[in-house]
Length: 279
Ligand code: NAP
Image (cartoon, rainbow, N blue to C red):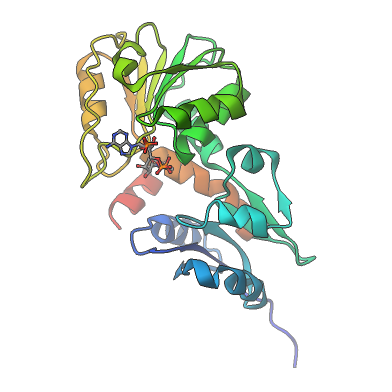
């Protein structure tokens, strides 16, 4: 009997996982490009993570996405960690290599940047300071990417100040830490303003920062994408900013994994957005 080629499997692990939009996204791309493959959501509890990582390649998985609460732990379990994942301290994309090694990468920062380039192509890294609200895992990925493309000054405020100080310690002197109570001053003269907190997400309080210092024509973007139009973006738009929602970051961060697993570079366009929004 001849061996049929294995149909590649990929998926996303998290705990819980039901909320993830990744299966709808990868499912859309698989169907659109006629690729034989499957993308499966898997609820893996922390205690089962090590066993799951051993089993998945044997079952035909070529790689997976990783989400909360495994993004940091996974770094200790991977054999090869990219520089950017090490710098960020978390991974979201794994490749199960043919030699048995697990390769871990973090594509959140690149996804953020690709979204910005697509939806605010006028923005240039040297346009002026960037203001970032929030210093969690997503902020860390975004700030590392901003430094990499050549932004010269990044203003950062976080409710828990020590987290912002730690980020400056880890990522360098281009960061200027503001106290959370002075965060309203940060948009003054900034070319790009970013909400990287979870505030504004459905079920969470709004980010209540008066944006009276936001420049007309500045770019404002939110990492939150449920809802697409957050109170932060609504206010920024009313003050004449060019706004970019957070959905594109989610779509773009997924593309490199899809390409590695299924050998096809997927497009992020209106059809992709519509497929994920209607899921
Ligand atoms: P995280 O590590 O848990 O960080 C949460 C951030 O929100 C921290 O800065 C936290 O401040 C702040 N925060 C939470 N509640 C607050 C409150 N009541 N007042 C002031 N600040 C508050 O989460 P994360 O992974 O960085 O994610 C942040 C957001 O980005 C989430 O909404 C997530 O869904 C979104 N995200 C989007 C994408 C995308 O592809 N678009 C990718 C990744 C993340 P403290 O440090 O003081 O707690």
